[in-house]
Figure 1: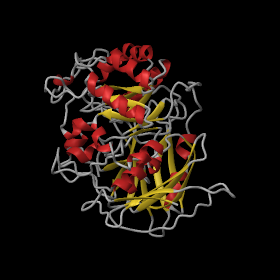
Figure 2: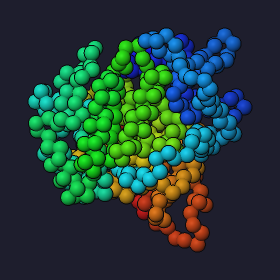
Figure 3: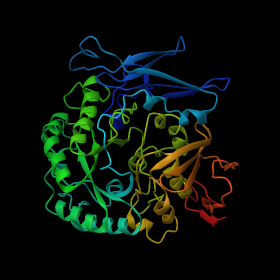
Figure 4: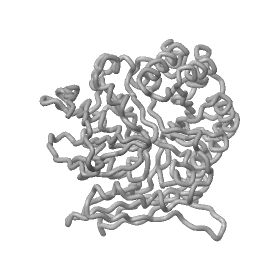
Length: 476
């Protein structure tokens, strides 16, 4: 049920007693259903209004308080697809390509300028309080020195890119301000961050830079600067940007999934393609398969991600969170969840917060949660000398094929993926708070071939709360 006034959901709005899609459920007889929509363009997002009395759900569009209507279109027009996926097993929902196939074919042709990649970044340290986005605090994270340290780490560990947040002017003036239009500048770096120097250093080391544009949901400011910002990226050879929309949408009266914002997000992707820029959107609208039409739509957030664990006041995401997400949010499209936290308790920074996980589960997420960009989200110092880092170095990010081996909603899921242009398979399995053993059949491997299996598994005494870093590594 929507908590429209929840402080952590300030940027969203779901009307009445309704829920956003995709919605997944299991009937008493064990049939699995998922309700969603595809090809959401120039239209308002659909929620499902719940009638508890009659036990029914009805399509309910997100409206606009600014204009008082939900959709304004010229006739004739076609609505987005309304989809119902039906499966006897939960795992077959993940295997379906229905949503992406209901979108139009590629409209931007060549996208060879973007390569799927793993990345690290100046990001998690802000959520922990080690550094800050703004320079006025005296502990600015996005410095030239810090960025070069991340580049050095990436070059040593088969990581393709570094995300730098807090690099540009304006961060002192947006938190808590009602009128955020005109606050951010997407081309001017802070005085302690040499943008061109960092990009040049990355090229020397074979490491790309991922740009960051926090719009603060001030849509008109971002619209005015997009051409200039993307042209700067193109001139520097930067091909990916993480966009953010933290805060209540401006203009007032608009909401994330209203027609106005649907067009905002989609138009960003279309414009970025002209400058050979790929979009990884945070605080986004939901994915509805448009990555088929505009493949520079590489990933998006759109769930309670890893950062929630660092600053939530109610215990963070529960252990079962991602074994639910795999059958709900992930059915819509790629997720930038930012896995790879090794310092799970992070008591040095925040004693009252932690990630409800084990280190083995953090590794498995690189296979279970699909995205063509995967972050190694922890601080560099937490990776150095840890044998689990080898898995992040080795794991693929661009897949030839995927097979869902098992799964039950909210309990567990196991997925196998074959790396593109290699014979390497990776198998990831996650569970909720319940310990369980399961048998995996490897009949998807090539016949008459001997494989080496390197297994990263929860240690004998591992526990998501009491002993989360107990890890066993073996080879068979």
